[in-house]
Image (tube, rainbow, N blue to C red; front, side, top):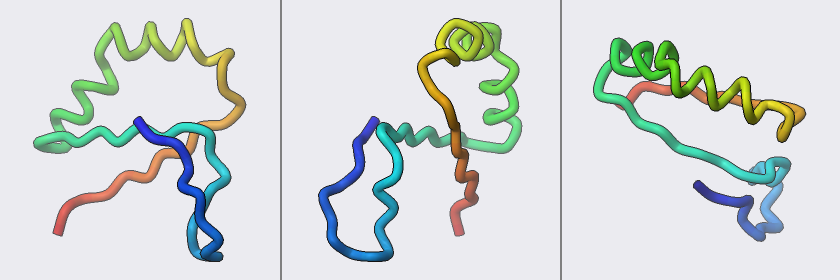
Length: 61
C-alpha cells in the first residue's frame, strides 16, 4: 500500500490517494483472486469509499 510521492516531475502521476500492488504467480492465480468470495465481499462492503478505481495490469518481461 502506498501514497503519491512528493514530486515536481511532470511524468509522475500523483492524482491518486492510495495504491495497492498485488502480484500473482500466473493468470490463473489472478483470476482465482478475482473470483474469491472475500474479494467480492470487500468490493461490495467498501465500494462506497471510492469514486474511481484504476487497474494497471502488466506481465513481467
